[in-house]
Length: 447
Image (cartoon, rainbow, N blue to C red; front, side):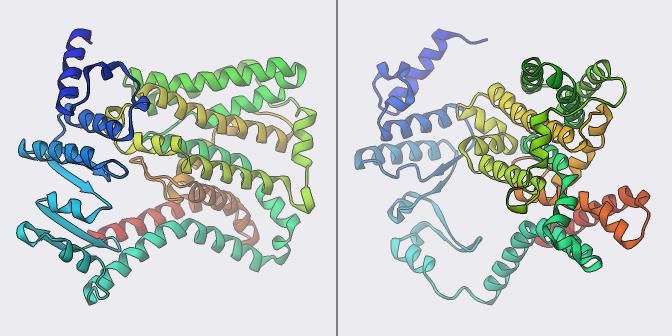
């Protein structure tokens, strides 16, 4: 339980430690000067009693007096046995450290300690032209592994598409690309939804069913009563956001909650439409038939989805979402509200799932609650093929989209090769296992 009196006393103690007036305890942090904001953040880290404190250039842009206060706080923390890992853009600040690691190209070039720490030693090491044979080889190998991991999804997609084009050159036309990419739009959107959830170190087993329900809603209620249909889709989006709140506040496994939710989505869909049917709204059918400058609408939608995923990951909120996947405790201690971020995560994922359902309606001009069922596991596979880590914190929109497109092209590839599409799932699974095996080999070599 929270005790206001105890909180005020603790805040006053740390305000005194960082030498800020006591009346600043109730002031919003953004109302403080830049230096005082940095001191408050430092006090938060110390108050959490963390054994390891990471500092990323904390004194940049602050005056000399505030820097001296920082040095005092850091020395006091180190004297208490805490490990301070300090990244700085000012060489002179490293003289305050017990040990300095000079890095180049992802590798520690030299470690300075004790009396060996000086500005000349740091600068000469940082700007040395020769690393040595082993350093160059190790740096080159690390660059290869990093570049291969980023490029692998694109190369896999290019290889599959290249084989298809070699078998039938007409596929390389705008019309052929449109035909191949048409069925991939829902999977791309569902994969982006799954990517957002995986970024939080969770897995969504209900995203396919959610897309299926959106498919049913858009082909039934949205056609008969557009305002009621739009409201139903918004309610679905809100319900998806509430899943994030439930998972976070009640500390329930996401895989269990989303699996249970999938039954709810499917049940509602069956109640609305027991058998396939319905029709697409006029504006949705027109969007599907849209072909700007001869480019298929499916290509436009996939590119738009990719740009949306890239923009999300590059934004501030995208960094926060990945941060909670990598280290939720640190993010919470930094002041980010875990429950609200969880709701936002599932709201974004739900938005992609709803768009996937709308695309299914546009493509098929009808609805089927079972149509989205296969997308759940395929989206997980596509995200993993694309380089997203199931441990969270590491996702890539480009990789996820390429993974989804690669899986969707497997059926076409088998058809052009004259192989029965009954082997589609087996080939998709084999490709996933092969990619995971290759990554494990690279990880093993790195270790």
